[in-house]
Length: 101
Image 1 (spheres, rainbow, N blue to C red):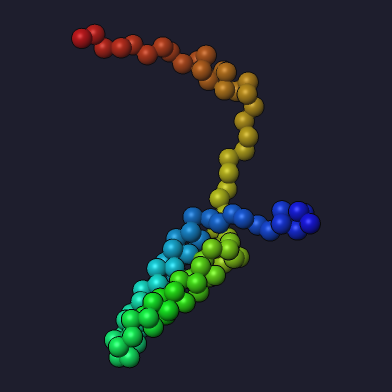
Image 2: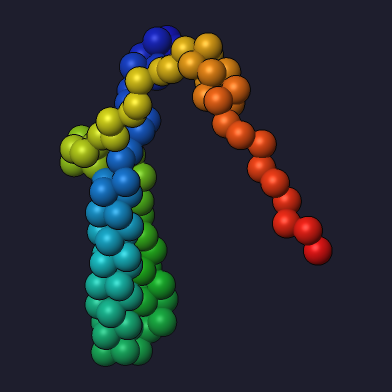
């Protein structure tokens, strides 16, 4: 059963995060405007709240799961360096001198 959950991708790239944030904010804004107008016309504040909540749920459904449209630009990571290469770099450096005050 756990292998099913582990096979689901959970990462989202930076451009995907930006797109998800824009979609989230857009849906919330549009639902708030529509809810306000509809609530004002019907003189029922409850409808405003219901419409904003529906917009929130819709935006969560569209933006929280890492859909494939949010994973189009994966990062290219640097290759792993050997630990010996790091030791050579630190040995080649000259010690820093501190300015006298």
